[in-house]
Amino acid sequence: DAGVIQSPRHEVTEMGQEVTLRCKPISGHDYLFWYRQTMMRGLELLIYFNNNVPIDDSGMPEDRFSAKMPNASFSTLKIQPSEPRDSAVYFCASSSLVGTIYSYNEQFFGPGTRLTVL
Amino acid sequence: GDSVTQMEGPVTLSEEAFLTINCTYTATGYPSLFWYVQYPGEGLQLLLKATKADDKGSNKGFEATYRKETTSFHLEKGSVQVSDSAVYFCALGNQFYFGTGTSLTVIP
Image 1 (cartoon, rainbow over the protein chains, first blue to last red):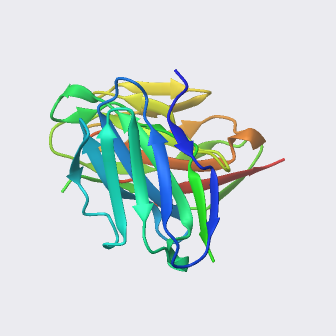
Image 2: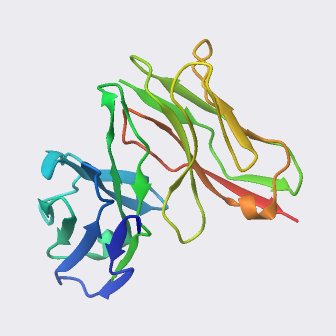
C-alpha cells in the first residue's frame, strides 16, 4: 500500500483565497482524521470521520473551515477565505478500530501539506 | 476525562547517552498506548505500542512498558544516536490528542 497520500505538499496563497487540501486514506481503514500542527499549539485534531460520516468536528476553528468525505478513498479540507493565521502544516491520518470501544489501532499519517497564507 | 501527560522538552543529549521521556496517563478501561515519532519535515509514524498492562513495546532500540500500577508508559533508549533527533509523542488508543510532543536533539 502507498500509505496515506496528501496533496498538495506545499501551498502558498494570498489572504482571502480558497484553499483545498486533499487526502487519500489507506484502503480498508474506516477512520480518517484531519490535524493541524503549529509550533505554538502542537498537533490539534480538527475533525474525524467514521465510514465517511463526520463524527466530531469540534476542533474546526471556525466556519471558514469545512471538510468532506464523499467516499471511502477521498477527503477534502477547505478553507474559505484563508487568513495568515491559518498557516500551518495540515496532516491527514487514517486508522481502524481494534474491535472494542476502548481502543483504536495506530494512526497512519500522510506527509502533510504545508500551507502558507500571505 | 482520559488524557496523557508528557514530559516537556526540549531535550538535548550527547550521542550514546541514555534517554528517558516520561509519559503518564489517566484512562478508564485499558486502551492501547502508543509512542509516535516525527522526524523533521515528515508526518508522525508509530514507533512502538503496547496493548495491555505489562506489555513491553520495542522498536529501533526504544522500549516502553505499559505499567498499570504507576499509570506510566515511559520511553527509554540505552544509547541515542544523532539520527534519533525528532519529536516524540505519547498517545492513548482511545483518544486523538497529541499535543506538542517532546523534542529531542542528539549532538555528536
